[in-house]
Amino acid sequence: MTTVVAETATRGLVEIHNVHKSYGGVEVLSGIDLTVRPGEVVALLGPSGSGKSTLLRTINHLESVDRGSVTVDGELIGYELRGEKLHELHEREILRRRTQVGIVFQNFNLFPHLTALENITEAPIALKRLSKDDARELALGLLDRVGLADKADAYPRQLSGGQQQRVAIARALALKPKVLLFDEPTSALDPELVGEVLDVIRDLAQLGTTLIIVTHEIGFAREVADRVVFLDGGVIVEQGLPAEVLTAPRHPRTQEFLAKVLD
Amino acid sequence: MTDTAAPPAGTAVDLEIDRPVENRTKVDLGAVTVVHTRHWWRWAIAAVIVFAVAQFAWSLVTNDRYMWGTFAEYFFSGPVLIGIGYTLSITAVSAVVGFVLGTVIALGRLSKSVLLSSAAWGYIWFFRSVPLVVQIIVWYNLGYLYPTLGLGTPFTTDFWIVEFPTVQLISAFAAAILGLGLHQAAYSAEIIRGGLISVDQGQSEAAAALGIAAARRLFRIILPQAMRSIVPNATNEVIGLVKGASVVFVIAIPELFYAVQVIYNRNSRVIPLLLVAVVWYTIITTILSVAQFYIERHFARGSVRTLPPTPIQRARRWASVQWARLGDDAPPSGRADAALAAAGKDAR
Image (tube, rainbow over all chains, first blue to last red; front, side, top):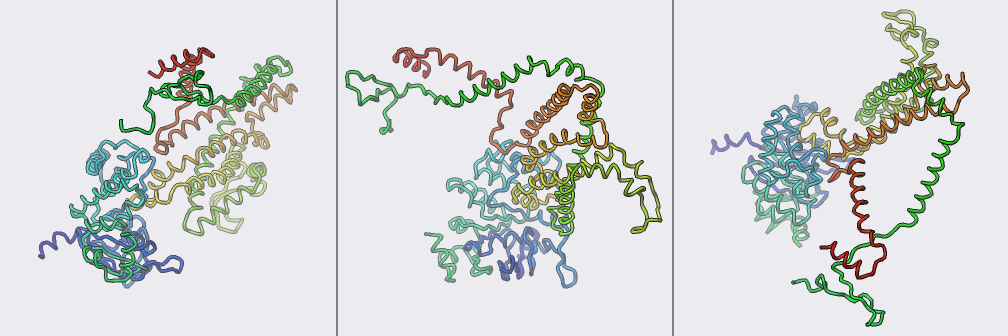
């Protein structure tokens, strides 16, 4: 057992301790504790306004936290512990640590003036990780992996929503993150395009990247997730195996939510 | 064969139910041609415009008070060409100063630091308030307010480390550049800020999430998208600057407009010399407008599915459509069955 832990301990262990976050006096996250094991696939569920997207965005420090901490493989994202206090890091260091955590947005946020290929090569080139040629090769490989090898030179607006989201996933993978966050990746898609994106995420889950997915696709969560975490009012109300939480929820809020969503 | 709702192509359809059966003609709906609506009012208004323009053009040629001979004599004359040189160089340098400084001020305005954003706001407020002419005169006569400029102990007037007479530092040209450039920077800043805030916040966020540093985020991700809305306004400003540069006549810089004024004050031929200036300004504006079109096209990459055609491509397409139409319109009122037969042939 110890060897297994040693092997995987450096591959995307996310530890969230007592995270609090308020916007203008309204507390959105009220003390979240969550540990995601390396390679685990966690689905975050909850009604809108429950804080699930905010929690996701604190993991790569797109949102700062008011109290508590988030670490990836033991390293604080966005902060540094000096004595008893967390000091926010300088931009450069935040950017470096952030690249361990990729994110895929609900609205794709592809760069519309760059081709699919350039969208993917931009970060590896900007961070001087790869030469232009190597980045291009990597990007073509990633596009092939998401089934879009023939769309390398297309601009995002020439692609369907599902194709754009697949490019966005390839873009996030280009930095080889330890953890990949998905913020409602299929919510902006037409129903018939949802499947192609979920297929790509399913593949990633099998490859052993740590995935944290905010989603409304209950069926998908049931199939892919190792664990389902249900948030409401800025706290974790219930969590457990998908089969347990989704079929026999114990908490009344979970029951109410699932009854509505599964209707 | 599964489609039962619509009649299959080639079936004759009765379109004239109100006519006696024996007079009806059968129309093949699969083979009819489409006649577009004729917009008679558009043609009428266009005709009026063409007439007015032609009348004006005719008067330009026949009315000898325009004195085209004088126009030709001065169009390429030395003082006029030197004047154009001044106009272009003052415009170019102050546009560069204006847009570079404007970018810095725009970023200041968008800064999270209250100090920086208030300072930038203050700059814009001040330089939009002071009339340009006043600014240019003050810069030119700065020696009157501050006889020497240099580095010394703050808030004293008697101890200097280095010191220069102001008149030596600020020539007329420098005063023009300072006045126009600083003035332009205030306006450019707002144009650039407008462009930057028009780009979706998600773009900057996505770039930050990918670990791309702030400067590259701005120049590689945000600014190229902002240029779509910056370029039309910026071209307006530059064209405005070309003609606005004529205000530097107050400090006697012989730019284009000043040059023709000097000439017509001497020979009293006001109209032809003003026309010299007007035609040159038109040429410069035309070049800038063409440049604008292609710059806009460049930054439109990816923002539309297919780029709009260039005027040359459009003209070529229009010509080929007109050519094709000539063939269509050939039988104006032939017998119905003849026309239908022709249409049917076209369809096949």
